[in-house]
Image (tube, rainbow, N blue to C red; front, side):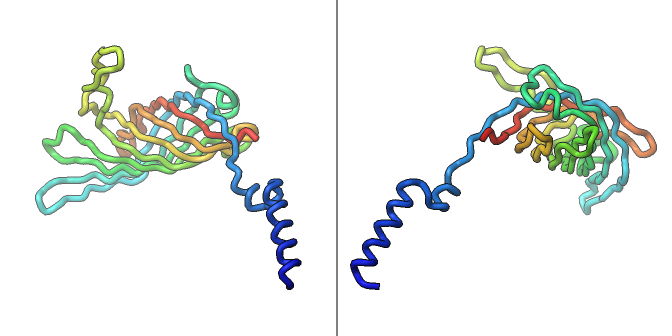
Amino acid sequence: MNRKRWIVVALAALTITGLGVAPTLAARRPRRTQVVPVSKIVQGQDQVVNSRLVQCPDGSVTLKRELSVRGNVASWTCDTGCSIELLLGVLEMKVRITRREGQGVEVKRGCWEAEWQLRGPNGVVAEGTGSGIVNGGTHDGLVDPTGEPQNCERCDIQHHFEGVLVGKSKAPGCKGNFCLSIQGFGFSSEPEQPGTFSMRLEGALITPCD
């Protein structure tokens, strides 16, 4: 290719790029997103699937337990937009708990992790994972912006859990990614005896709007 033809080709490429025709520029354009507040309450039961104790050389005991959780999901005070009608149904969770145990241990604190699915009338509408703490509270010891102390719960509150859920919504007209903060009572049932489970869920769904 001679010098004159090379210059013509280069100018043509610059012209196409400047008009926004170049595929690479189109691919880099960020998608517009919308934030949908999500607010739910879940009530149901949890059931022990597997449970075992592990003892360490120092005598401390750890409980490892698997739970099956199932609860009905209802819209709550701050629910908005497509979440009100489309993100409802039955929440199913497979939960794994690791916590302190043993004689004389009053605060049986530990951690949990889970996989979850939200099932509607026509199948799974959302799914993801979660993690957090059991038998510990965080809503105390702080002062809100108005100067009022917030002492809503003890740091050693029993049968209580907190954490986060993340995942994706597959619901037509309400697809996107979740960031959800949760807290509730449960994850404390014993073998052969289903326990009561209740959970508040607050967060957002980040969904494309173009």
